Length: 147
Image (cartoon, rainbow, N blue to C red; front, side, top):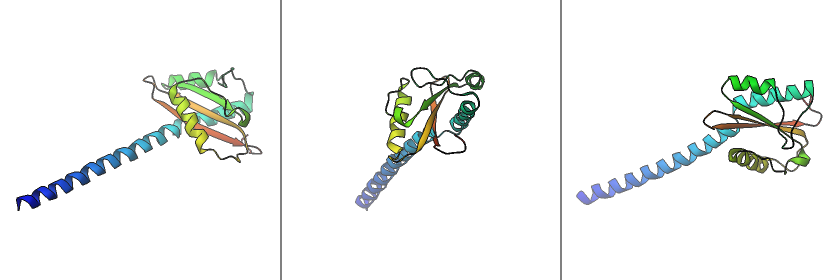
């Protein structure tokens, strides 16, 4: 009787540990996905796209957009806001920035198909004061009414 209790306890413990490990893996994957498809970063990218259409494009040598008042508006909400303008020909160029930006760019490049027909891509980056950065990639296609 005691041996049966020990065996059942060992089986239950093994199942619980396995479930715990699986849940941690899934939650880690969701955390990555949520930081790479952030809704605030999506709206920021849309505002950048509107700004590009209305006022034109101004970047520095690192593809970083010069956003002026838009960046200031997001700073008042508690974010350090950056936007990057990328064309298909400059997609493989290195963007200098935080490691989280480099990780996002690697992830993003791995998800793009070879037959993309994008006019340009806007990468938006919103970072909180404690360096929790969120990203979004807005892909604007050739002939798109938004581009």
